[in-house]
Amino acid sequence: MSQRIKINTLLQSTQTDVDVTVKGWVRAFRQNRFIALNDGSTNNNIQIVVDFENTDPALLKRITVGAAISVFGKLIASQGKGQTVEVIAETVEILGDCDPEKYPIQPKKHSLEFLRENAHLRFRTNTFGAIFRVRNTLSFAVHQFFQERGFVYLHTPIITASDAEGAGETFHVTNFDLANTPRTETGEVDYKQDFFGRAANLTVSGQLEGELGAMALSDIYTFGPTFRAENSNTTRHLAEFWMIEPEMAFADITDNMDTAEALLKYVIAYALDKNKDDIEFLTQRLLEEEKQKPQNERSEMSLTEKLQFCLSNDFERLTYTEAIDILKESTPNKKKKFQYLVEGWGTDLQSEHERYLVEKHFKKPVILTDYPKEIKSFYMRQNDDGKTVAAMDILFPGIGEIVGGSQREERLEKLENRMDEIGIPKDELWWYLDTRRYGGCPHSGFGLGFERLVLFVTGMGNIRDVIPFPRFPKNAEF
Image (cartoon, rainbow, N blue to C red):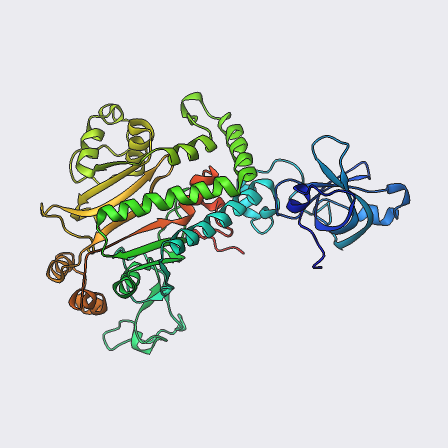
């Protein structure tokens, strides 16, 4: 098995007239002679040339689309169009048959919805092969970015008793028999008898625990799964998704913005460099998709141009207050084209507002700062005006918010007062407050939804298409 050479390596090879072993899945078999073989290392197939006159007809019949085969033969310079090298097969071995009458992924155009229903097989298509190679590269680049800067990778808990956002949209974790749940004398669920001795849930964020690490290690980051029990069936929401959450001691809101902008530019540049073929394929795919849309709904830039655009422009930075003034005076607001009209200061910005600022007004990524404290979380540092907090959101074209973060409130009294104002019990977060009691310092952090990043870099339109097995309401297939 170890003698196998990956197709991507063979296609880039400058050596010819050498014996090679190649293995993969049949994408096409023409004229009983030409096999298009793919092993997932690239979207490009290698052509295998079979001497059908001297090959067992029973074996030829088993070379069907989707079958797994092993080929030993000679790598030669190709005389045909479309490839530089090909393999003249000496032996072909069937590793796994594939019934052509039943195999769903035939060589034809399939809808994305059909492929979601067959998510266990969709990796074998060009589109999803490209997406998940890009996802892999972005994941690696995230780690490399932080490791190069001396951050410590911290694993925060997946099972937790805290709800970092205070939104209450959590999945509960229990080992109770749900048909026979223990109750207290007052009829409430008796969590003291549960596995953890208290109510527990799947994490919505590793931030609060990440702050604990930053208060000793200075700079940490988490990169792991998070969960929201949000009954949302949009193209932007998942019940299970991955989050990147750095926390930095001795860092203010400006340091936070600088780090987030640098991270986004770093990973996009890395993917453009490492996945040229995949991103070019996805660019062409998006162009074909855009042709089906009315002219006014088409993107002004191709996918590659959009990615390069983000690298070559400094992100526009402005306050929430300035953004509200722009939106109030905007044509879609005045003509009531926004689904949610911007009435004035205090409005919670929606995706349509964020995209207007990015795509129509500034025509570049935007960082919004200093939001009203009423629409932001309890842990964000309160500004001197008493109305706003040192929060920042990064908005991207086609996506809206891709990063959300803030300088954290390090002043114990102000943090406790804010928790009292909005009814967050201090006794449950005693450990969090301890970091303010014992050597607290200014610190900042942000969260980057990994799937939204992959969505942006691949140009896909639905977040369910950039995670291998999407979890959403009424669906936990595979």
